[in-house]
Length: 185
Image 1 (tube, helix red, strand yellow):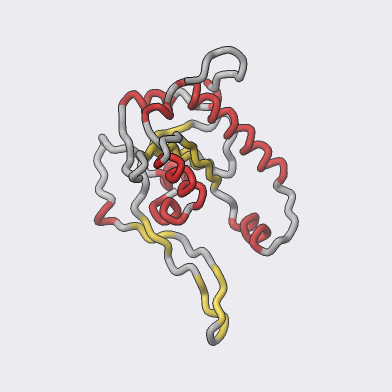
Image 2 (cartoon, rainbow, N blue to C red):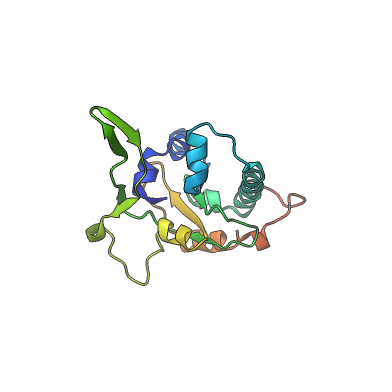
C-alpha cells in the first residue's frame, strides 16, 4: 500500500504488465509483521504457515467474488492489500493510493557496509489534500485493520466509479459468494 510500495511492487508490476495485453489482473499483498519479515529475510523458519493458508483462502474467495460480481470489468487492475489479521469478516474498502515515499531503506554498519532496514514512510502532505468526497487512503485503511482495494487502469491511473465502489462493498467476506452456482463474467 502507498505509492512507494506500488511503484516498487513486482506483484503490482506484473498485474499492470498483464493489463497492457488486455488481461485484467488482481494483485494481492499482505502487510507482514516486522518479526515475520525479519525471519523470512534471514531465512529463519517460522510458524506462519497457517497464516499464509488463511490469506490464500481469503484471496481465493475474493478472486471468485470479484470475477462473479463484475468488479474487475470496471478497471484493468485491482490491487488488494490485506492486514495480517484479515479474516472472513474484515471489511473491504475501495481506496486511493497514499502519496508517500520510503524513508531511508539502508543503515550504515561500517565504512561501505550497509544493511536493509525499512524505516517507514514519509507522507507527501502537500499532494495529499483530503475532502469528504474522496476515497480513503490504502495505508490508512490497512492501519485500521481493513482490506484496501485500489482500482487502476493500465497507465496506473486510479479508477473511480460509483458502480465499482458498490461492487467492492459487496466483497466483505461475510457476503462472499460460494464457489457453487453463479456465473463468472
